[in-house]
Length: 224
Image 1: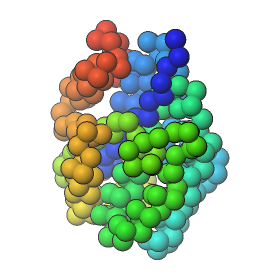
Image 2: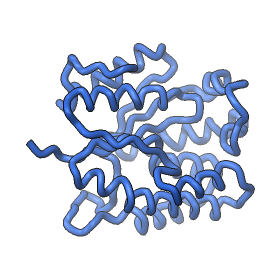
Image 3: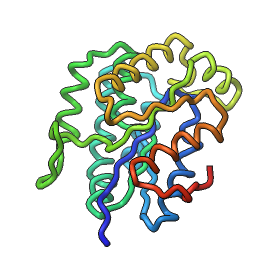
């Protein structure tokens, strides 16, 4: 039986622990016979990965940063996300457009109207595909909600920080506020998880949600 493609994004400030659960959810879907595409933003294609490296490590102003991120997203959508969804796969993406509004919009204080215009240009759906607002958005966005003070403790000494990880706690508070605004504006799409709890409890929250939606069976626990 042909499957309908599913697009699931994972969001949260650095240190929220979202990346540790992506593999577990992928394993749960694969256990049910689904084909899974694991990817990330910025990145996911050779071109987008080059742009990711520039965004994370090269000095630039906020507009240049936003333009590079959306350029990477356009290539990612065309080369990876849209083809996978057309094949009926489950696409699990570590960050998507919500991160741009949270980090560049709320965190950097960049003009949200410009970000919305870029979103409209870049995320236009392929011919024959429809959505309420005409843009490609995730079917579900899982937000790993965490106090920035806790995230800072988790990140301390983990590795050499990039341009974002090295930001002060107040920057991440603004980012967290940005995620909250996105979640409030699209309640049906967002799943809010309490990322301050243990890894096992967070995984139970995550898995339970997809069981409730009928996308996973209760016995499919993955490897989280």
